[in-house]
Length: 106
Image (cartoon, rainbow, N blue to C red; front, side, top):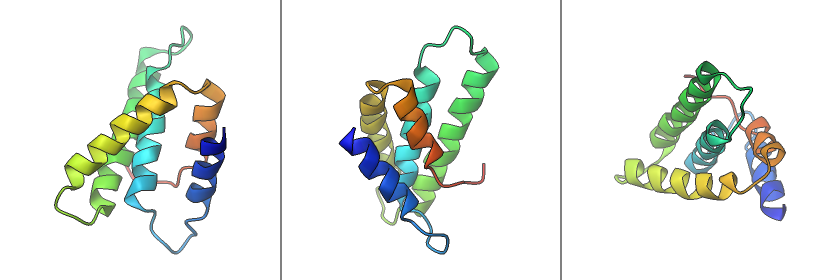
């Protein structure tokens, strides 16, 4: 629970003028990915696909924000590790992380 609070605070602390760090964007991609993988019998396949598309938008924004030659590898590794951690959280916790994410253009 402490990790969720720290992530939410770090997401909110970015400020309007500063672009979000690549790690924040990658963590958002991971949360959306974990949300898409959550079993929900009432969720239509189209909604799951849309959530996955949003995760891809955050991943692309993270790669763009990354300064370094290993952006693709670094972003993919962080998303995979964080998505694995997020998958162990209750749905409500994942949704709180998503709610704290900055907006990106898709």
